[in-house]
Amino acid sequence: MRPGLIGAVLGKEMRDLLSNRLLLGAVAFPALIFAAIPTGIVAFIEVNDLDPNQLGQIADYLRMFPDLPPKLAAQGFIVLNFMAYFLLIPAMVPMAIATQSVIGEKQARSLEPQLATPVEVSELIIGKAIASALPAIIATWLVFVLYGLVNGAIADPRLTNLVFSDTWLLAMLTLVPLICLLSVLLGILVSSRVNDARTAQQLGSFIVIPIIAIAIAGFFSGQPTFSLQQVIMGDLVVAVLIGLALVAGNWIFEREQILTRLG
Image (cartoon, rainbow, N blue to C red; front, side, top):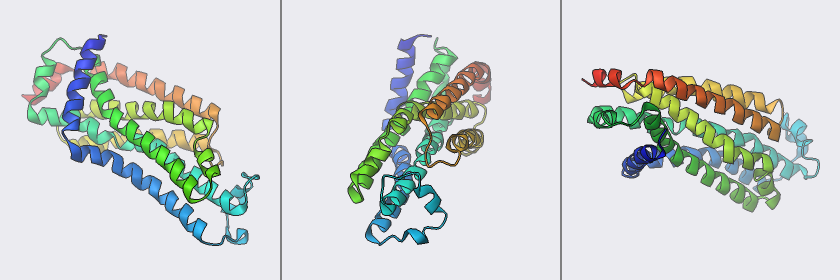
């Protein structure tokens, strides 16, 4: 595997992506929407008097925050409980970029010159995957920082501390990039077998979302967040899936078959 060729593919993909502002906007918008929902709930709780006797089922979870008053504990629960979306966003959002990187080039007939070069399939896939994953990773990180700071400013700085815990910082730095890479790899591999972007996105989402949903469901176990050990376990599981996707890519992403389909 040659880093120079991977860098060449990456550079080409980034130039194409930066020229498509609409696609870049589609990356950041879902992350902002997901973050705005719990932030709005936190703001609503902040401006209204909270009666712990009217909290219903959430009252049981407030006992997990013994050092916080009931109102702030409810806000803390909301903030942490919605943070699972920060793992779903990198699984769903970059799929559009990943499928477009192959389907768009098929339609524009710009994939053929790349396949005619000495670049290996694995190098082409890795370059495309990194280029597709980077915007979603950066968008998720930026929204995560805003999420912690804004909620802390609305209610109490202790909410910022809950968001920027060691567990979530590790998840942002390791699990989010890994999930992004898994998503785009599957999107690229699916796109190599079909010629329609919407079909590729639907098939890719069908593959990715159940995998990530099962992983997240296993993390929580009745808690508002998950532990450092569970993050590390998630890293290992997704890393293995990435390795399997790369191995499968050499079999699925065959340049002869793609050129035949293009012809």
